[in-house]
Amino acid sequence: MTVANRFYAAQNGLVILVIDSSRIKDGLIEENLEGGIELYPHFYGVLPIDAVIDAIAFPCNADGSFDLPVELNI
Image (cartoon, rainbow, N blue to C red):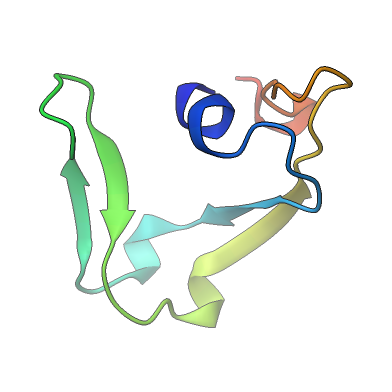
């Protein structure tokens, strides 16, 4: 939630796309753009629509922060 809270705080109408990475041939890279140690997936290219397996509403809390949607709690 670090990225959501840092860059998208208090924004409404956001959606999390659940992607099946096995359906992406090229362009998916695990990297940290700020030089830290935690890697994040970044996709560079045209996302094949069949790679999107779900879309989950991602509303912010009353204070503008975000919590992981229940559907994604593992």
